[in-house]
Amino acid sequence: MTAPFDNFAEFSMFATLHDGTIYIEEDFPSRAAQRAAEASRPPPRHQHPDQQSREMMTYWGYKFEKLALIPTLPSETPPHEIERHQRGIVSNHAQHCSIVHTSFGPHSLILGGEVDGLLAPKSTHPDQPPQWVELKTSEELPPPHLQQHRDILKFERKLLKFWAQSFLLGVRKITVGFRSKSGILRSLQTFNTHDIPGMVRRGTGCWDGNVCINFATEFLAWLKHVVRDEGVYSVNLRKKSGVIEVKKVRDGVDKIVSDEYRKWRAEQESVDEVDKATGGGSIDKTEGKSSG
Image (cartoon, rainbow, N blue to C red; front, side, top):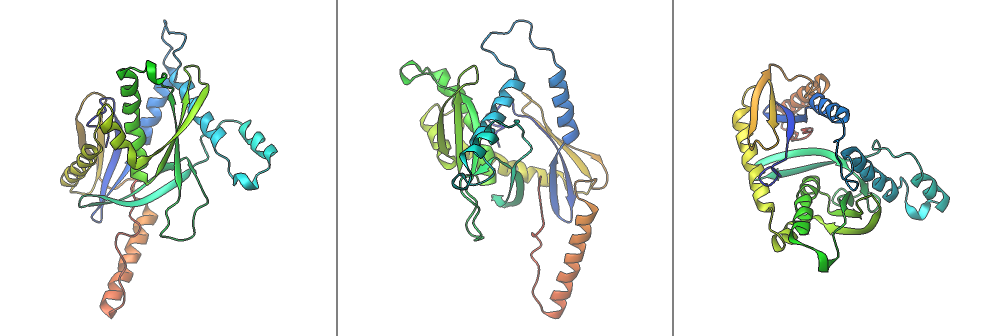
């Protein structure tokens, strides 16, 4: 979604066609190799004292989540337990997963992704979506009388990724922790996800949410046109290239669609055929479709 306005956007995924549905997952081996290469890269020889490494800033983000979230309701958690939790080891393993059914124009999708936390317990009513919240950190802005256009531009460009991630997963609130250059938390601000495109439009106008949505719609139409035969396809966007490349890399469906899932789908379709033949109810074929 962000590619039209983010020259540094990149992704590497695999796609496969099975039973009329395209399944997509991240290219995990390439991601692991990229992270290993970044970790082994030596630090710059001449680094400004205020400039921090990517690893350090990533740690700050996880630390912010550690301080902001607890596994139980605050009203039911003793103060000493909250303090003990906040002093615990920083980890990114604990997470929620949001699975949503959405669409871009005529293209129906089921998406799954990580979400940071909840603002309230999940409702048992299926029509009430979870009150998800996403946590982000960003360098604090100068005081209003000292702000320059480039300060606002930098932050609003960052809001593009914040918005796209939360928009796709149905996350309505984003809480941003504004930090100093040395990683000290200065303030908090919560944004309504659906308000962010309008805020940027009234500000620097550096990106347009409607363009992002239209781009995603056209991309999905093009992907359906390209991935028309069964097999595994690589889907890649390199930094600064402006080109999304799709090519078939091997036959079969690989591990993207597991044997267990294919067996389950075949069983459900058999039941569906029996129901149709006997005049019974039918099973919605969209059930069970997933996209990673």
